[in-house]
Length: 126
Image (cartoon, rainbow, N blue to C red; front, side):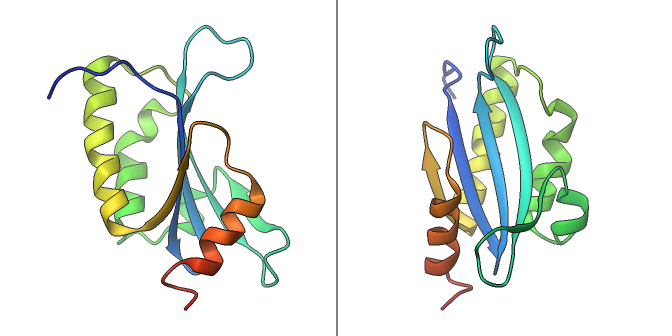
């Protein structure tokens, strides 16, 4: 695979009903470099807020899911700059998640209303 310049992205996956797994690669504030981040969210019953969010992957993600396996593999690089080989391998793994889960993707931060739309439209909410 040809080496790619690391690009900014924000992706939210609907892992189960009301469970969202996020993967991001972006420059925070005045940081010189982009960093890799994952997080997990649990929407409340009315989808008006999160019951839990942030670094709660261990408690929110089922251990038998592709999202959890991705998190465990790449968590060692959480809040880190990836080299090109790491970034390209992560993109391959990310593509597997895209084939498995409903998702939204953006070059800008994903807002709460978009996460709610994803959850309402996803296969678990039908």
